[in-house]
Length: 441
Image (tube, rainbow, N blue to C red; front, side):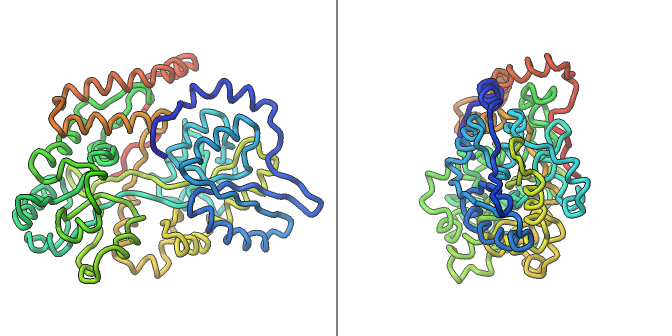
């Protein structure tokens, strides 16, 4: 889901013209309905096993699962939309929801969700559910969730004099300085890869920056809320607490964590399994996870993951919705987690003893209550990738901080020019908020 792409606004006119002639997506055989389901990566392998149980519960419905690599998924979905060959149901990264909603490719789900006891609003973490809402309309149901927490060396933090992870930026920075004093001049407190945009985005959200202003039509990166967060981020490098390098400049992240080159990093749930497999047995009890500190207390983190959506062109939406309900059941969500390691989107699934008893997983459970969405505009991934470049230039001293943010806002304003024009035509006021909900807390 990385790299710049054509925006939905650029793609929509041609796509809409071709899609007018689109036919149905699922076939009806003599013995019932066949649903087409596109799923990405490892999830595509696993869900094929789960849908067999769905078919046993619904004898008249057969599900054809097509596994698609994440690297090809975005282009295949767009091509399928243009050609009128989209599936009935698909997995969609929640940063893509706004784009496909703008294309009018997705079926609104509010009515179905309100009528379904198994997919009520209260079943989901609020920030995760918000990623599926665009202009007040729900287009997706969370399937699995993703957010970022701190992975850290408990032993190094203890040697620095701390028995728990600090809760505020000030305390966290003090702890990083203390760790630096323990590990030495050429080692670091935290690894924040300079080729990732996620960390400055998270700090901005924590400091109540909307990131985008005027209904998501202009940048808000030079405004005080984001500027202070970005300054904090850059200070971690300038004070020698984080190495000014990207992922490609470190030989093996897990080995460097094990040897104490850095004591912490901000990452996601996929690394729970990777750390357990890749770290030496001698460190099996020496690392842990913790929710992120914030400006004045426990902080927010980004809301991520994948959702299930119904394609508007499907002729079997009722059957496809039953499949969504099945995959959303807490027992099925727990089984999905056991097979993939993907964290459940259903709050009730977290009561399962295997999830509730693991302290490293518990940090994610706590953080998910303070997960907030990035702006839901089709251009967001382009903006985020551009932020990564601008941030690295500041970290390396090539551009002054304030100059970089002012220039970045201008770049963002240019990227969003077509969005401003479209909203002005629709009569949407510039005073509307940039995203449906602000940070929790």
